[in-house]
Amino acid sequence: MIDTHSHIYLEEFDSDREEMLLRTKNAGVEKIYLPNIDSNSIERMKALHAQHPDICPMMMGLHPGSVKENFKEELAIIEKELETPSQYCAIGEIGLDTYWDKTFIEQQKIVFTHQIELALALKLPIVIHVRNAFNETFEVLKQFTGNLPKGIFHCYSGNEEIAKKVILMGFKLGIGGVVTFNNSGLQKVVQACKTKDLVLETDAPFLAPSPYRGKRNEPAYLPFIAKKIAELQNISEKEVWGITTDAAEEIFGTQ
Image (tube, rainbow, N blue to C red; front, side, top):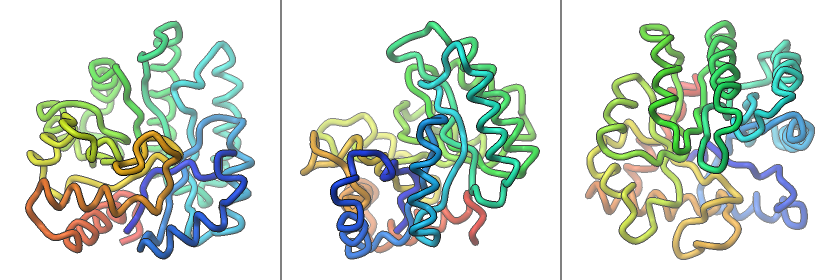
């Protein structure tokens, strides 16, 4: 299996990172994609990648939650990193987020647009973070109609109608621990989608699946997500593992 989105370089794992990686391997997870957040996360992410280059591929991007007054300086740092694009597998995570604060939404749109342009120039996929901002996200993506990079809507939180729109645009849906929560709207979305349009993710250390809900998440919990998808789609867990792995490899260009 592939965990397409995990922040295991964060300090929440400093006390047991190597043990966590061993649990991950034993759970059948062979690769963990690392999305960047902002300038403060780059060195931590690169250090982990240096220790485990085959297991932990890196993305480079500026998270919408980190878009503030200094967004131009942050973008310049991202661009500097991408002067060596071969060390990165995607531009991410990028996007729009108005859940907590709408103060910098216009700046977020500028940053999101610019990072899509970078992805197109470098021929890299994008990993999109959307929270409480689907309409605004589609407004930005509309500018690139017919020329969108491949990508993933990470931690998908929309309804079935929006999911169909996302898939028609050529994106995959990142499905994480929320799908295991009782009466989650995400369960209906998964039932309405084809497995080939889904990829697995944990977003560790956040959003741990049941039965670990509320605790620190980690990639070793990915099988709980795969199991729930298998139940919802009435297929075997092995099929979910294989199809979602193929989908991830299609996005990240490893097929």
